[in-house]
Length: 363
Picture 1 (cartoon, rainbow, N blue to C red):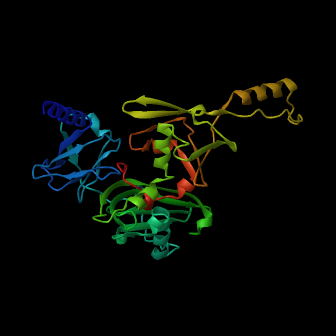
Picture 2 (picture 1 turned 90 degrees about the vertical axis):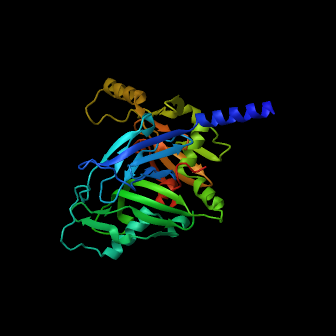
Picture 3 (picture 1 turned 45 degrees about the horizontal axis):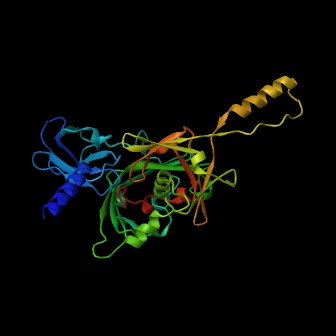
């Protein structure tokens, strides 16, 4: 009996080591009064809390994540706390009344060259995606989305006046997505997908599981396999073969160990990309007045220059491509990488949008 009790104590003690509590108080900045009912959540997760009559919140987190802490309250601008786990004492958060804007983009009275219906359709295709999961999504409050097409720059902008309420019927989540930035750059005055030059969107999200008694494991597992998160976890674990990922450089099968240096740092993994060396250009016919020695020196510089590698990743016969121009990024325990701007994806993985996203604490 004593052995069992001791084992139970050890298990409880060890599990406690992996949990941490985030707590704080939320106030109105101007009046310095507590705000009851403020929604507090870790971005991209299912972890949340609400403030009580004293403006107090407390969130017990079993496993530390790199997500930012978001505080949301109607009529106020969202408050973001970066790296919230650095605060061991309760935080004091002052909320400021919101001022509606479009990040510098003015919604003018000038008639748009496209109808709202057409712009909304393009928005949903590029924000939610076109996969099975994306097609199952319904935005309950589409009317809060505002559009502006800049005819000079050929950019379609969108902004939501409040968090988008998305029901994902395939993955069985209700998602609150606070859209802070959205744009599609075209090469001409059109909404035709063929002339899209770039698509970008940003925001914070919270997930609520609505699967109930109906298991959504198969659908969520399908969304996870071959995703960017799956790739990042595979990279950290160095299990490319086991997870059925193939890495290629210049069309040749590559050994990940030759390109990615992985190191533990501050509870996350630091990935250093060992960039390649560009091939030397041949000594072509001298048509620019350079001497042979000049051309040899130029060739030497090409040999020594570190180039940005264009990686190809194949999963289930689907090709994706990514680069890391700055040569470094980080991955947390949930497979979330950051800074997001340091890794650029193209191909299959880039096609998955908000409709295919899973909570970062999905396992």
